[in-house]
Image (cartoon, rainbow over all chains, first blue to last red; front, side, top):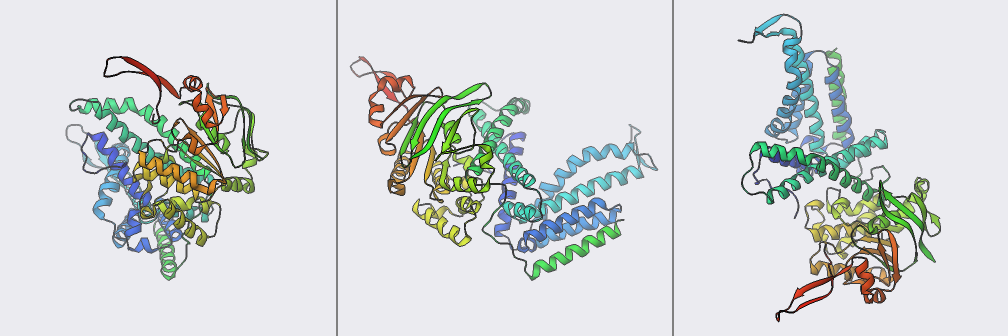
Length: 278
Length: 264
């Protein structure tokens, strides 16, 4: 049997790869969607793609912090109504987004000229009000966009997302690249895990974190080459079975009353956010 | 009538020549084995026959049409060809990219734009025939090796192609699964279909092929019926399909004889 087992212990890098793989697999196969009976799961994928994308755009355009915060609050409400665990969102989305964005936003606290509000003891670095505002905008926008995007992925089978994109005339080449990128990441994580297992089976005793890091670096190029070859073969297999870039599914998309109501709600909320956020 | 005609075909991966001026002809309705050691060019040839790769020189013709990238740019030809020719890859993992086994098997007929009711009925039928109906809601890449191979096979057989290309179909399967797979291939299409199998497993050669092509270093080393190929131990040793194996008997005497490896 292939696949991952959550009880397995390992080093930080190995555990991270395992966690990423499980999250990615769950997202792509939309296990929540198949089982869940929440609000977003019941909506037509086209409404979700258009509505959530419109909200992401509104949060990117807004120049008022409270508007972005309101969209973020709406995303949390949608997650709750779609039976998606807020704890899971915090662990998988918010902390990750905060870490990456924080690395970019923290220097802005000190480098943005403006009214001083705090000085770091010892270093005498001054945090400015404008710096706090800039960092808050950046972090909140990223958190909001990541949450809305993940809501789509967690509540919609991946192939339905791709089909909905094609319905909105997103070019074939973009949809194919998007589909293959996800498959590539999944294969890369799977191959990385197998490489760890293989290396571990030939290693006596526990490895120090330093040794684990060295092992990860030395295996990186092999991993990329192997994954590239595998994903190339996956694409050939898709072509061999008639894939020409279009997405065909057994499920037909049908707009029901709830979908029209949701489409109206997304339109009104997005328009309000754009207007208020000017 | 000629199904595939390979004419002085050369294919290279950067500096490595996989096929070198290869010429062979495969008649319609035949069961052919492409024999050769690892790296002899078998898998590359299957991909060229399936119109996934295109040679740097020479030609591959399918029922008289030369397979070119330009020809595959036309939907009519490409979809008809994919309907007629199916390839089962050696590594089933590359062939399984859908969220469930049912979706996996339904993928090809949907791409060929079959009516949805027909797709559902045909998928159910092929899952039952391959005795994997109970797996239909499972995630394909979490199945066992034998189950994956069956799903990969079902995903191709669902179209009932006239030509089946198989790349090491029994590799990494347990003996029972190997035997079931061979039985299925022998029975499939009542023998009226063309089956081209790339393998280095000589055990079931008589069952899966009535013609063999031995590849060695990207060139055709021999072409003959299976029984003739199996008798030619010098050829098989030269093509690395068997090797002299030395071992000690209980009496202490050393002894050597040709020896095959089926699962490398």
